[in-house]
Length: 413
Ligand code: ATP
Ligand code: MG
Image (cartoon, rainbow, N blue to C red; front, side):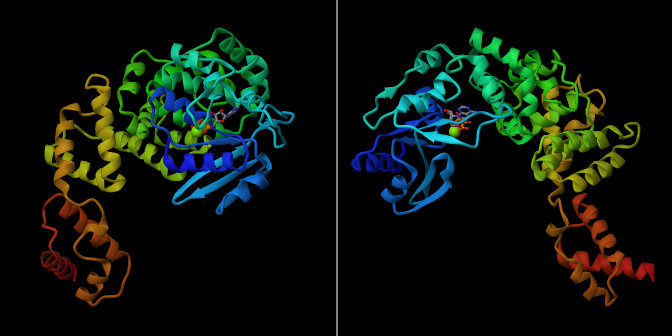
């Protein structure tokens, strides 16, 4: 446990309060996984927490959460609580503070998320979360059906944990999930998407997608496309490294038959950030434009065309597409001029520059050299220069570029 969070716990203890690490951090530590948020639970009321520490932020004071700042670290300290009445299968806005740690653990979703760790290392585990961790089982705390009725997002979390950890789902938990599946429609898309993203960044996204499909959650969540678990898709998705989740998404949407434009729409529906949406859709665009190649043409025109695609979508999207093609394998990517893939890779590297800002001259230089008034011609010439430099017809050298500009202008006069 990071030193600073120990200080937070021990200061609360010194003031006569109870304090424990709780939830995901206890679980991840026991599993030997990297721990990110060190969440702390305490018997102290929020005002008392604020009075113990110099620097605090009332992040979710209504829900009992105070963020304690410790150097450059921030810890969420939450008062033991139970949740008020659930409405519309979502987490309630009202909570009630309680004095018993076990009451707080009881409101948590799964047994392995309902453990607390004291400063001396004792694990408080009233729901046998340790045993479930050891056996690799996702199990609801209490009656699964009731828990999924209370907050329908838990169904997606259940599948996310099963897929990311490679765990099985306890029989009653799975049964409860299938019985309550239609309530998924009440879950806000943002919360759903956060879980989907975590699932896709995990070890076996194909399993998570399969479970979502099998449970019926995918269709009940009004996902705007059809996902059919495809035998070819399954191993490939998991082989793409998890750090390349962007490529996993592109691969998945492509495998579901979506083009770049449709993928954009689906990702918007799922409330993905604009930049993520663009990154994913651009990979598909590179593929679509490449598929439009006339492979019978000469190799040199292929190179020009490829370079124009790389300049249009950027090096990153181009290289991600190439990586995706590597994972799909040559046979499956027959729509593309496969014999050119290694050329594409080499050409991409050779380009050396990939955007206007990397060109050794600017639009302003162009105006100075020519003495002409600005206009659309500036960006036209700049784009031409970029293509020439990227295809190594010209070096990225200021003097030589200026000479070229002069030549073009005088030949147009
Ligand atoms: P991650 O590793 O993705 O952060 P996590 O389990 O820590 O997983 P958080 O959203 O950070 O997930 O939640 C922290 C803790 O709060 C959980 O471990 C669990 O005890 C509790 N919790 C979170 N979401 C729910 C929920 N929907 N219903 C009940 N308890 C929940
Ligand atoms: Mg967490």
